[in-house]
Image (cartoon, rainbow, N blue to C red; front, side, top):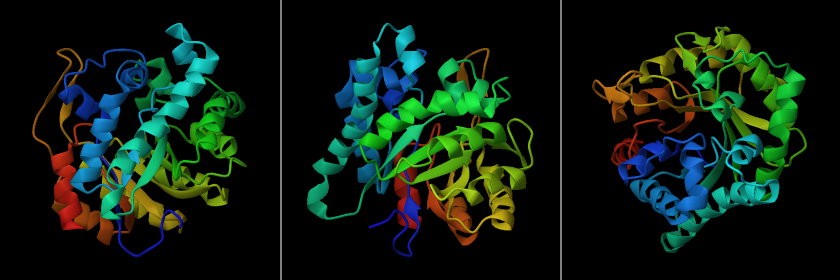
Length: 295
């Protein structure tokens, strides 16, 4: 069975870190949710299970901010870091297996965040790191190899702000034997680094290893325009999982404003071509339950 077998859209999960924070965990750490791979793995299982029980078909692993350099800064050696990367997939599988009696199809997406996420300074929302495509490829490839060894259903190359990094990731996943999707973080009709979306989506067209493209961690209002640009340049399945649309106050370090994420918008995105619909920051299991019911 391949990722996109069947005609129905696939519902992905929401914000894993949001759910872990709601369960009382302080993620103010350079490793973010990846810290709990070491400190509280059972809590990650519980969070995955909450999204599965809400109706998500796809769970995204707690490896977004996990990298060998990031673990090394915390004094974690390379072998242990590799084991933690593998654990991220194993924990999602454990949650899936706990629910296997109902016979529903459930998948695991191994999260691969951008280089900027490992810097833990918001660089993933700017891009333009000053590194070449080759340097970015070589930085990403080792952890991709470890995650691919676990045979997840898909590698989620997500929150990519920059066409250069997308090109690097397309090269880095080549030959791993695991399908990948590539999703950009965008603002309006451009990547966070300022490149036109049509140019960004075209990167995946020549890569047989990238089986779907789309956007994530943007506002719900950015989704429909992004889908329109994607349809201009690619025939690959489209993936969307925005955040709630709330605003982040960098001074008070708090969210404010209403959520703009809704089942009605999810139905519109599917009508506009999305094959995978989920959520990112601030999207909870209850939100995913409403989307799953609507779809």
